[in-house]
Length: 395
Image 1 (tube, rainbow, N blue to C red):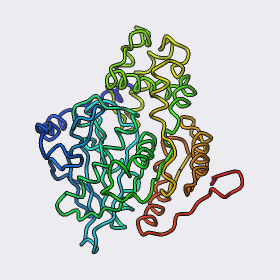
Image 2: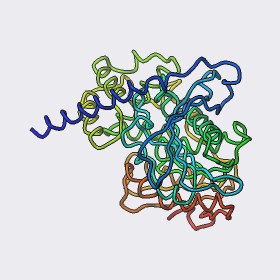
Image 3: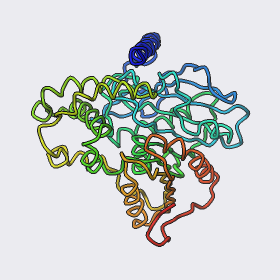
């Protein structure tokens, strides 16, 4: 009875979201992009959103970015502006990069019933007077496919969301901003730091904060493949990349596993209910999934996984890494290894380990640390660093 009731609830929630998306479909359907509208970060469309905390004003936005082939595309997201008058010089800004929400159009956070709850630390950032902009990434909200775990695509969406937020009437956002993300969003935040100077010289990125970021995709897909979470991640990555890059999949995935992979690709991740639904869908992958023992050793997959693993940030760019000690998806030693490489490159790195915290709660439990750290960077305070500590960065 409990499972039947749960499935009924899931169906009702999915129906509600489907209706909401149908009503909003006109907003997410972009105009023809040509002329001035092709400039990255151009604000194409804006509409009010209800329910923002602390008397803030929330706006759903549609803006331009750059696709995988250099073409202009439309990306959606939302902006939350704190109450009260802006300071002289404009409000500071934080760009939130969300964790995995899904790989199909309807899984955009800006469409979710809990859109504001999904932004870790939102209330504290608003209380500090910061504008918060949250991109959906390409292919979520707007037409897909979503380039899942494609770092430069995510970073362009983040940077162009900051540009669009600055153009939003009433936001009064300055050019200084920090980026904060969890999991997939941690990868997006790191890639934002990698490309910001060249892609968006008109903006001033003052710091990168990432919780349990995907820093080593080859290790992530190889080590986690025997787990339910790892198979979920692999299924979404394969489903997305075969469509984004036009790669064949028929010799890579067993025919009997294709229905389960397609089912997982069609499901969003917003709540615990969604995770239960995905546990049911992924059962079809438990007894056979891929035709090869190690996807990471097969080309061009191995090379693409390496290309989408972030390298070292510019040495002047401060970095905060937050990691749960009990994370079995993004392992603590993998994040610590990335921190050590960043230290070797000469950048200031703060590494915070959260005892007893797993992957799903790293963003939530690390939010207060991240908000305080970003506020100091936005205020121009010197960045602390653990790089001189014995044994490298640690908590």
